[in-house]
Length: 213
Length: 286
Image 1 (cartoon, rainbow over the protein chains, first blue to last red):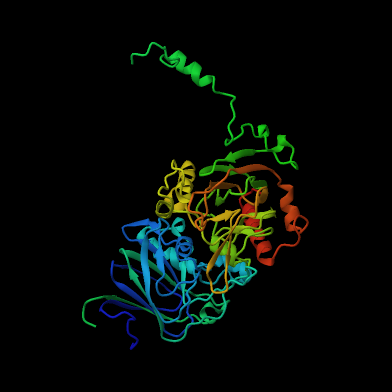
Image 2: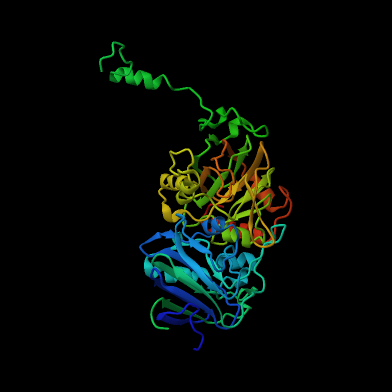
């Protein structure tokens, strides 16, 4: 792999998440997580929790109400439902990341695409199985971030997942403002454009500022 | 105490008499029990059919468990109520309102008549079956302690500017639920719209006297907080009373699905009803 972290520093973690798989890590306060969209237009579903108290979790609503707009990009503060900052987007090569669309699931697939899609793998499966490693369950799920996913809202309120704005190698970097548990589902959806109909791997790099490059 | 005036509550008998003498009084904000005693019962419902009648204070909250087929009408009599709502399935509260699916699945961010309020499990908890306001919000959520302390200087439930999340937490705790059971919420009677650049814009109230009706598809725990919207630009905490009335209307569920109540439902909505009814049938409820 030759794609570097978006924010330089000592690399403390560098992992590739297989297509359709889950991933998690606790990112320490001050460390920066770079997410690399290796093949382009791969939705990375993401939930955040205060590592010290997982009842404090990412709130899409608090985040967008406080910043006054629905999409995330550089400068967006990712807030918990208490109002406190969990992480901050410090660099972004795409410009638009979704806060509204939530996660796909076997169950919602039946509503969106038909009963025949219930058997397909979904992000809720990934969140549940990865979260269970930390004692989390269905009660701990909430509206998640979708890195690299594009969900516009039309003037009449129509909204939907449309073709992405990302491309191979595009990156977004988020700094932990407190020790933060990051849960990821590398989205397995194959029925809409969120993964360009072809789920692909992504790379997760955590750097610690101040060290060697 | 050296007062010569003898207190009427200095003895247990006096305190008891003092307490009991208060019964039968009314207040501007209260739950009316039995429900038919509501002084503000809807014109189109016989008062004897009501199962919930309440006026929620500005900055107040309420909670109730209601049966499948209950129709719940929220009324904003003075134009500055803001009803923050969460729904949990009564017999399995880990199944609850999922705001992301509620806007994504029907391809519509703005709640109005015909909008399904979906759980995260491919089922519908309630459908909006009437709406004279059209000023609602599923995006910005409710207020937080952090936010209201910064904006108004206070956020506690007993303060003059309670945060919606603090009120939701109390309602949740009354049902054996807690912090983890508070997902994103919807709010009624204060409109928010998204501009083409993705920015959020406050539209506020549609005026006094507006109503919205929800029809429950499952037995549900309703958590309801009446407090100022997080994007309300007014520097002073501004909120007016909210009325709640509910009555059994299970026959309307069939009419809804048949397209005879509010017109045809979207295909995603029909599938959500089918999933819900299949689950209830398997449990022996239907």
